[in-house]
Image 1: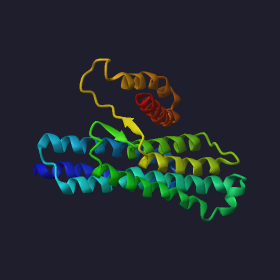
Image 2 (image 1 turned 135 degrees about the horizontal axis):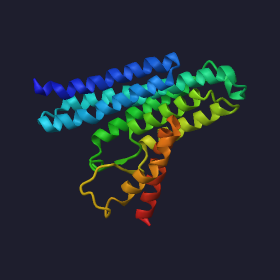
Image 3 (image 1 turned 60 degrees about the vertical axis):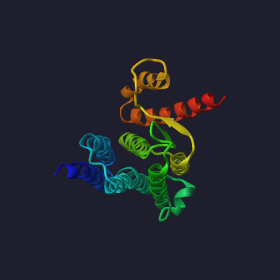
Length: 234
């Protein structure tokens, strides 16, 4: 019986992603973000439970990747798709002459998320950290950014260009070779954990920025990881 518990939690992650996608297509981006967050919680616990119960299995690994691509690949793509479709309807941008096709660019992110997950499954270097942007972080960034923009009814000419460029930047970061730290602590001391404590302390003010704060935290995580990687190499 216990061998089914981790896979059940993984399926709850997948279901959360499906619900997030529904809300994304309905135009309720904050509800979509909420279910992405719920999915991330299930994603955190499924692997932990599998290790605690000693019931890790190949099928669980494959199911986890499938669930992650729905929750952290397709759901954020659906959020961007709906937002581009909506913003093109109200903005006056030359890019929006492609209104009927432009929003579909959002699904490039789902494809690169799948590539990222496949790469992660085969890459043995990512036991203590990440190579490239983790899909949950990417999904939370887009959910928080779009949820914040829509919550304040922010539209401006050229916004579509910004979103499209952002899609390609995110797609690159997902499969890049940029080392990114993980918030895993072997010890609680300062030495060896400097970057993690700096990140956590500097994130405190961002928590007061509302939904935008989560997007800012993810962006800061990427910047800090890139700077840390550069300093370690030089």
